[in-house]
Every structure is written in structure tokens, then in C-alpha cells.
Image (tube, rainbow, N blue to C red; front, side, top):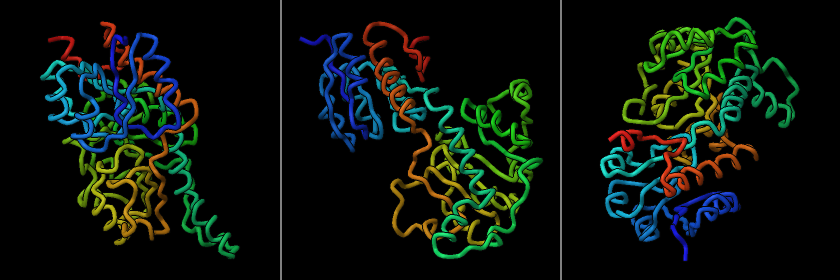
Length: 324
């Protein structure tokens, strides 16, 4: 008989072998499901000791109903699908994986920025439609000496800043939780949000999604930006007020955008962004590589295994549970 039961509430992966290898090594039975609602999670999670989730909502109702569950681990860096406050109040650990795709997301953000800067997508589409004319890319400005503003200066934007410095970009950042000393060690100047919007030629968005960051870039912020600026988002869609972004693009307040994330995913077919040739859209794919996916799966499962065997997991979100 298994010592523990662990529910994988939902997943988009072809295999769960890495997770099962980790969890079965501690005597855990793995239960697979594809839950989309809190009630489905509750039904599938009856009498489990831990839950791994991808997109399924881990709400207050879920946490308060599933008394036996000790740990909620999410596939990914973000944990906005989990009610951390309720989990902490009920003594449940919440885990993520903060370092599994630093290289992938920082590379993807830079790739989107470069594609916007050099009009790569527009040129490609033009050639394939039978037009051989480099003049359609105008205006394009030399990258060296321009300013990249990064909103948030956690692990991923730090990696991005190091890469961008090699291309001669001046880096500024807005992050009220990062010290000027740390920023200076990376060659980054800390500024307020308005200054970042006003001075940046490219703005790369990286904060976690929470009540403070939802809609962080809205009409006022777009009005501060240069009409030649590009906005890149590899964080979470709702960090940007999508309606405001669309208005800014339609009114020429900014030059374009590179978006790996959107408010509604998959994108709705009537979204105006689909018909803008100065917008690059990707399907929330910045995190992916063969190596990063394997690392994520193993580390997520290890978070659960650690908790169930009485250890403090490496990637614990709510450390107040340990300190209380």
C-alpha cells in the first residue's frame, strides 16, 4: 500500500514519467487528472497528501475542503493560480520553481525585442507574399546606445540585462523591491516607472502577477512612452491592460509589441492584436526547451516529495508556514 497519494490535477505534457520517478521513490501513488474547475480539483483530490497543478484553480474552497493535503506545488515560476493567503492561514505549503527557465525566457524576451527592432516578422511575411523591398522596414534604429527598460529585476530580467549589455544597450529598471546596490552590480540604473516609460526604446515586462501588478501598464503609462518604443511581455498577460495596449497601438502612441502572454489564452479570434502587423504574438512558449521542461517536472515533484518526507522544500513560496 502506498504511503502517500499525490494528485497531478492538470497537465499539458506528453508524459509524467519524471514526476512519477521522483514521487514513487518515496512510496507515493500518483493520480492523474485534467481538472479545469475548483470542484473538479476537490473531487479528484479527495484524501490526497499533495497536489501538483499547472492551470487548475487552487482556490480558498479547494484548500479549505481538502484538509489532508499538505502541499500545493505549481509547474512554473508564477503561482497566481493558487490562493497563497488561504494556504498559509491553513498551514499548507505552496511551492513553485523559480529557476528552471531563466535562460529560455530571457532569450525569448530578447528574441522578441530583436524581431521588433529589426522588423524580422514583417520582412519575412512581405517576402513570402511576393514583395522584395527592404524599405518596408523603415524606420529602424541602431540597437547600440538605445535604452532597454525592464519592469521587475528578478532572476529572468537579470539574465536578460546581462545579455542586452553585450549588444551595447543601456539598461534601466523599475522594481520597488530591488536595491540600487544589486542593480548597480549588474550595470542597471533603477528609476521610477514614469521615467522608465519615458526613456526606454524597448520595455520588457517581468513582474509576477498579483493585485499590485495587474494592469501596471495602462493608458497613463502608454501616454508616457516614446512613439518609437516597443513593449515586450513574457511575464503574465494581465500585467498589461490589454485594452489600453490596443488603444496605444491603434493611436500610434507606441511602435509595436512582442507578446508571449495575453489576458485570455488561447487568444480570442476577435482580438484586434491578431490584425496588427506591428505586433508579434506567441502562444505562451517562452519557458520551453527540452531541458527546461524536464527540469521543471523533476523539481516540482521534488517539492512535493520533500514536504511529504518532512523536509523544507527548496522552492517554498510561503515561508511564514515554516516560521509560524
